Length: 124
Image (cartoon, rainbow, N blue to C red; front, side, top):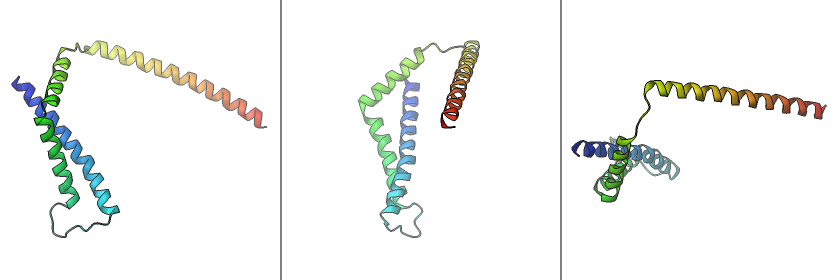
């Protein structure tokens, strides 16, 4: 259970970091569009501070919300029960997918050539 709590903390920290990165760009855009002043000499701009506070709020809310913690814990438990394919099965599946993609690409190429020829004949 202790390792699950560490994983949960890392997941919530990653969510906070992602929120910070997205909101940093959003707040910076709003700051520029609204032509709000940015004090000179500050290490962090006001939009950056808002983004940091928002990211921290996301982390704290997720960490303290029992429903989110319970759901994420259940997801981790389910992922630990999944039977993952071994290297040979993964390689074989990759080959099958690659071959099927090539076949589909050839079929689409054939249709494209056919329709291109028909359109060329039609417009001449």
